[in-house]
Length: 393
Image (cartoon, rainbow, N blue to C red; front, side, top):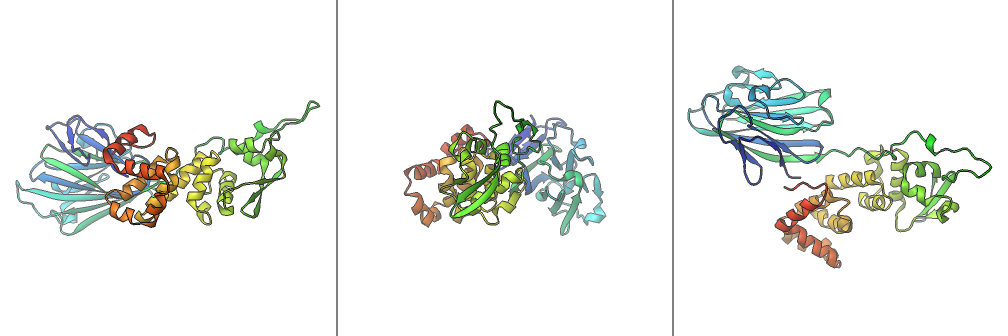
């Protein structure tokens, strides 16, 4: 997942690939640039490489903000949850979240005045622990310096790598080392329902409610899976329609589910029963790719997003093409997964065309066409602009 510019001050210039920035003029305002990974990440690690002319005010401030607006440089490195920052070593000290480390603590050495040198600060954020780790690698420091900050208030937040410039003598390059997208949280209000009182009606002489109720047995791949009609119908519009008493499935005591394995369909049922809270446990026995296709068939968008996330975590060059071929027909439902598959294969066509998965894909004219169109970078960029949920790189 590429880094893109989220916010950029009027005095900051960025390169065509958005990964290098510097200040155009000396000005306290409008000199902040902020990057984004496009969605909340469970863990990410980036490296900021600073290049400056040594001397007074030749430094830069690295920040990790929650949507920080354009601010003065001295306001960026306050010990606040909303403005997290670390200064580079060229101002004589490193300031991490307001925790100043002196020259003695850093074992600093003096640079040659007027020379242009590089130093880097690597920032790692683990949202599950609320952990921020900063590692400084600079000629000003003998060896590496590392600082860990762990706060409950930093858990499960969306941080944005941010830089504020000291003056136009400095520039910064940002490099994405790794990132893991955070597991999506269910958002469907119907799936999350815990109050079912609106589904209850009192039977009258005119007739009883036809809302699904009772037990249903699904026949899946030679197995019989028992489930509660009321719970399925209350939390899923698809199953409400399927199990409605006016439908053949609603009147039947057993309902066949063709083209599905028992573990995959059981994962669907478990997801609904848990109100979407089962998480990765769903995939202990079930193939996430098969569950994804079932989730699309059963209109369970939250489950689709969970499967997409799971598949992206395990994506490699070896399985990217097979995954792409499987989901290309539903690419609008899983745009981030399709994009990740393309990123894995980009520049590796020699390996791709020699794989068994490519031979399998060649059986589908649509699949081959979509692959070639997606690997055509100018065209792929135009297509990304037209697909919701995909940010242009």
